[in-house]
Length: 197
Ligand code: GRF
Image 1 (cartoon, rainbow, N blue to C red):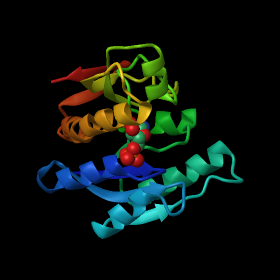
Image 2 (cartoon, helix red, strand yellow):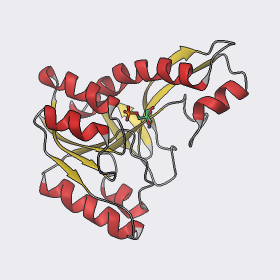
Image 3 (tube, rainbow, N blue to C red):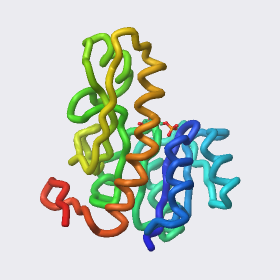
Image 4 (tube, helix red, strand yellow):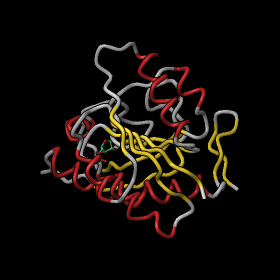
């Protein structure tokens, strides 16, 4: 049973999907940390009886903020960290310290559409499909090896909100499935690759 820490900045719907999945999964969420006070996900975690913590980032260097995060995760004996709508770039030191045990969900078919405003850009480019990716986190933004992906169609008359909702729906299935693989030791980060088996 792996001990999971989830980092959030917002509503936490992916956190909600992980909480719903954990009852019969090889993981338990033991800590939810937000850099934003009042983030919706904090209430979801508290309702589920999970310990929450707010670590504000304002007025701190990236390294100082990440050191606080790292200390809080270690204090909770966290083994795997899931980023779920966590809107801070992590320092190289933090990502290296958690290498292979730090994953993120991104609302595109990586390596396409890294960064922000993904759905606007996908529609602008008239893509016929988009999706979501769960990947190991490495220092370069949204560039780590992909563990799992889910695809959705993009409709000709899509708005960014409509596409975001369609992608979010598959995110909620994808993230628990990918975390189960990692928690079970069925996928590992080896020499910059996601290796299965
Ligand atoms: C998701 O679309 C996720 O892919 C992205 O941020 C959003 C977070 O949504 N990284 P939520 O807070 O999990 O509802």
